[in-house]
Structure formats: structure tokens, C-alpha cells
Length: 421
Image (tube, rainbow, N blue to C red; front, side, top):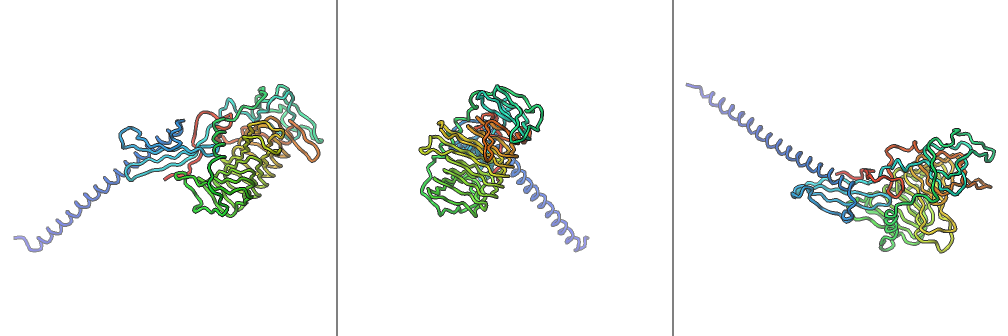
């Protein structure tokens, strides 16, 4: 006969076996649940990538209002796509969802550069040569007047650069600059004249970052001079001012749009933003406008009072992105882009009329202009490049531009990831 203790051993062993079996069942259930979660996550990731590629490839204006679609017409792969015109760039919003699970990507888009149109300089042909003096360096292909380029002796300074004068291929330019993209100019015009709502000079944002998945926060600062200071603004925010708007160095702007009659950025400012004005933009010394920033002077109508419109980049400031001027109607006082001593531009300059420089200015990228100007205290030299370096190969190979600029390719690419959830 078995001893009584054997029964207890059998019961204990049975309990252990039951616990092990229960653990195995529980583990199988858990891993199955994790597998389903991972499988759903991977499916949503694939759908998210598909949505991103759709926005990069399509020109369908339906996405400007937002559009929900099933990728494979089975109801299981739903995405919501939206394209937002944001200054000279676009913003893409993609949401892939299934029941309660949602993945989100928000990104800005831009275009590659068409190498067949790219050049360090495009100077229109006005039947006169361009002259170089001092430590001027032109690195890259150039479109120049048929009169060519020559070395000059100016202000007791002889030309000290490469004997080739232009380190690249020289081609003949035309009488006019390649035009800016009309559809993008129309977008900027619509943004400039957007419905602004009531004036709110005591405005304070409820959050420093405004998501592009929600409505745009439009702030109307009215027609009194306004100083923006001691604030951080980021994302889906547009500021409007009918007169002078001053951006203090204590303000930080990221991805924000600013439209005003005149804009002054105080010394020491750092950020990336798109600034558009109808009269003038002044960037004071030692500022840093990081990529992808934009400075744009826009005049869709001739001014009632004559005033020379100007974009001025101050001494030792740095701007990475696009600087351009556009006047729909010719005026007696042409718009000027002026770059101060020691200032550096990384990107593209499109000066519809005049591009003015001072000593030691540098452009890593390209300059398209109707006329160069170098101005001293007493003298102004037209189509003279003096101590100016234009270095097209010095621009990053990863640089992307706006379709506004005539050298943009047709291939849209991702500029920045703004939000991933």
C-alpha cells in the first residue's frame, strides 16, 4: 500500500504541472497578442509610407482640403492625407489608422536642384561685361553677358584670384532672368491677403508649438508698430502686421510664417522662419537664420509713394535658405538685396533687379540677378564683383529648394520631419 504522504506528493506535482501548463497557455496568449500588435503596427507603418509617397508624387489639389482613402479598396488600410501650402514650401500630413490605432507623420517638402539649370551666377545681358577685383572668387558654372568677364583694378586693388576668373563653364545669359514660378507666387499672394480676423496686440499663444494637424493660428497684429520678444513660437502659426514688425533677439521662431509691410530682425536673433514683406526686411548684425529659412520681398502692386524696397543682411550674419525679390510691375526704384561685410548666405539669392555686396561677403550657392553693385562710402560700382566669393560647389549636396526658384527639379523630396507619432 502507498503511504499517505505519496498522495500529497502527487497533488503537489499535479499543481506544478497545472501551473506550468497555465503559464505556457498564458505565454502563448501574450505572444499571440504581441504578434498581432506588431503585425498591425507594421501594416500601419507600410500604409504610412504609402501615404507619404502619394503626397510626394501627386499634384491633386484635393489633398489641400484633406482626403481620406482606402489604399487597397478593402476598408482595412485607411489613410488621411493633407497637403498644406506653407510659404515657399509645402507641409504634408499623413495619418494611417485602423480602429483605435493611429500612426502620424508630418513633414515639409521641397525640390531637388536641376543640374542642367544650376549655376553659381546668372547675370542678365545688358551689353556690358562683369568685372572682378580684389579677392573675388567665382566657383561653378556661370551665365554671363556676351561681353564676358574681365579683371579690374579698383580702389587700389588688383584682381588676386584664379587666372581663369570663373572656375567653371561660362555660357551666354539672356536679356531677362528665368522667371519665378507663377503658381507659387500666387500661393504667396493668397497667404499675404489671407483673412486675418480681428486685431489682437495682446495676443499670447496658449502653447509654444502649434501642430500642423490642427487649424492654423492666425495672429493679426494690426497697423501699429509691434515688437515680438520673450517668446517661443513653433509650427502652424502665421503672424501678420500692416506696418513695422520688429523681431527681438529674445524671440525664437521655428517654421513660422511672418507677413508684414516691413520687418526688422534684431542683432543676435537665432531661428528658422519665413519672412515676407512688401517694403523692406532688415536683418541686423550677428543673426543666424537657419535652414530652411526664407526672406522674400513681394510687391504685387506698384507703391503709391516711391520707396526703394530692400532686403538687407547685416554684418557677420548667416542666412541658410532662399532670399528673393519680386515686383509684378516695374518701378523707378528697383528692389535691392544687400549683403553686408562678412555676411554669409548658404542657399540661393534671386535678386530681380540689384544685388549689392560689401567686403568679404560670401555666397555658398547661387546668385541670379539683373545687376551687381558694390558700394563704398563715396563710389558705387555696377557689375563689379569686389572681394566677393560665390561658391556653388560649397553648398551642401543635400540642399533642397522651393519650386519658386527656376532651378528646381520636378522631383519633390522630404525636407524635414516635423512630427512623428
